[in-house]
Length: 249
Image 1 (cartoon, rainbow, N blue to C red):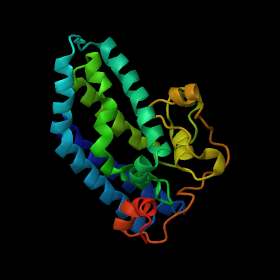
Image 2: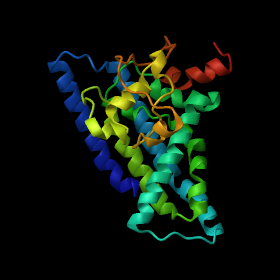
Image 3: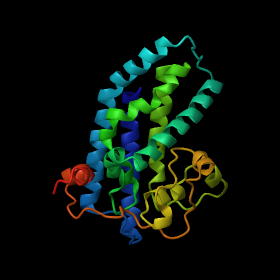
Image 4: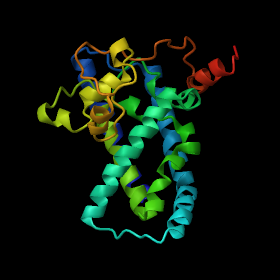
């Protein structure tokens, strides 16, 4: 499944990045920086490979739990809609806890370490979270959802979040009330005090509104971390927060 989608999506990503670079140059927006972009793409390549390599083990864990439960939910349009909402709920807490728990943040911080906001930042995936990512989705097969359906919805939602990483798309009117738009996600990537730890949603923004973590984009976002690492080598971008936790210079 992922193997079938991935090549087309990678081509779409590269096309969007190319178009955004052209627009940035022609409008003198300075949206891209060479080293930063290659760091993001490096994370993306490792992230895609990691997801592909661990797809089998993730499915095996989910199938083990799925076979334990006497409840089996038939794949129908209604069940896919319910699964989509539950996946959004799961992602919200996975993402929120990845900001609130230091050990999880040490991995997730990779995605927030760019000083830019552009389509290449979407590829800056915190690939080390594949170690524990699957655990957050364990309740879904136990409820009775087919693991293949879970993987399909989770992967599709993961891919659709790509379009949120841009400054070129303005606010989208009524869509802002339900969906996690580029405006909402710009807030999430900003280090402005009022924007910290806000807008955790994946495709939807409804759980942020429900649980009090929603913030509207008003002040211009400043991207990056509160304390940005001076050493911006690829390896340091991966491990700089771990080094801080372990007090390694």
